[in-house]
Amino acid sequence: MSFVKDSVNKQPIVDNVFTIVSKAKQAIAEYGNDAVVNATIGSLYGEDGKLVALDTVYDSLKNLDNRSMAAYAASFTGNPDFKEQAYDWVLNGNSHLNHEVIATPGGTGAVDMTVSYCLDPGQTLVLPSLAWGSYNLMAQMNNLKTVKYDLFEEDHFNLNSFKKACLSAMEVQDRLVVIINDPCHNPSGYSLSKEEWNEVIAFLNECSKTHSVVLLNDIAYIDFSYQQEKAKEYMNCFDSISDNVVVVIAFSLSKSMTSYGLRCGAAIILAQKEQAVQEVKIVFEKNARATWSNINNGAMNMFVDVMKNHKEKYNEERNQYVSLLKERSDIFVQEANEVGLKHYPYKEGFFVTLSMDNETRDKYHQALMDQHIYTVKVNNGIRVAVCSLSVDKVKGLAKRMKDIYDQV
Ligand code: PLP
Image 1 (cartoon, rainbow, N blue to C red):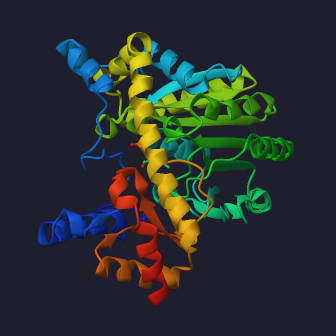
Image 2: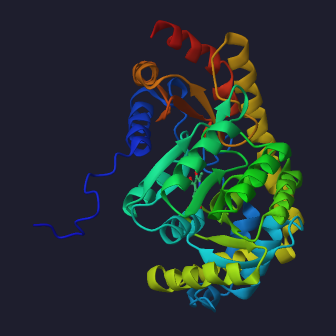
């Protein structure tokens, strides 16, 4: 006898990150901060070792009328001004497709809603093999199978593997749903080139001759791209999707606004035909109403205020941290290359990931902890969160990690 659905997997979540985070904290308490490298935390930290909370964002939030934070949102799909500002900020004039926006609790809400409602139980979701762990959990909770594509062929996007994964899902069902986490992929830090995006779209258009296609583009880290506005230009390739393709962009305020806990984001639905947009919107709206009902009104109003009244200051403040992130990752990647510490092709973003097989990874991860270096295990790799390490901590880290690697 069971108290929950028979169809759901009842094994507890194995949370690699939080277990190691607490080990790192314990080590800091025991040996002192200087003796420990805590490269586990996936949030942006300043050089002072504290979480970054952008002044522009929190000054705006605290200046809101109390009632603006207390009130329900104007609509189950989010406030109209939030939806407009989110669309303009994300697309930045790069796309001219029919569209709708649904406010969601973070990027997670947008990704989960797409995974839950674009596939039926038993169908197959196409994912990268190196990926944010929640995609697999979402698939599991919805009784979906997964097929994985290898992200890389040498130092570029593995289009062949992507095609193979899509074709194998298409053999068993009439709908193709694929996730591409780009730019600033978590955890590799890779971003597809415009040419690679064009190839992906051309292929999905081919697939759409026989199957409906949903492309979920998870852009969680886009506002920390080293290309800034230019990083959004690839989105103009969405304008060449066929009538049988829908794009859902999962946008998150968590990283963009350093507001992880405010739980605000958006699903931006794009298609050639208004009818396709409406079909997805109607289902997403019902899901919103039936699950979270409303999105944090204060967070939405803060975003609108920042976009309308403080954009320049916000860009300036955020860009200081983009430069800091670049400084940290430049040092790590350059030193890693000098000493021959192998990593996946990194371009930009919060994480650099060392590449190795899973057996070596397990031994190496423990060996690093023995030397008070805390990292996160990912599939065939070790994730180093340069986003939360000070420049001082990054300097010399690759060499230390290589020396430990050579002894494993
Ligand atoms: N997508 C990726 C790749 C992530 O790493 C995260 C958070 O870590 C998210 C989406 C969702 O974040 P949130 O729900 O806080 O917006």
